[in-house]
Length: 121
Image 1: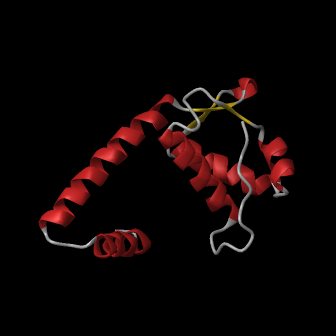
Image 2 (image 1 turned 135 degrees about the horizontal axis):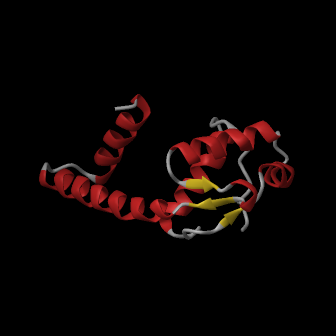
């Protein structure tokens, strides 16, 4: 399993970039359920990050149900991560249909989503 390099110029913290990348890839099926993730130490070394940075990303992913840690066996993409992809696609389709019905342009719809995403609700 390969993790894409993080963007050092990004305003997002490295743990958040890593969390987002893994969650997105799990939801899209790029990281199928059952995929074994590198150990915290191995991934930290690979990405040139502090161990605590990777550990925080893993903790948040586990709290969100994206990954599961099975002690000495390792850390794996959870089966529930794949189900989120369908749920997210359904929500996106419903939002797109509503936005079209209301006469919004795509940039207007994206702006609304971005605004509510950034404000947390």
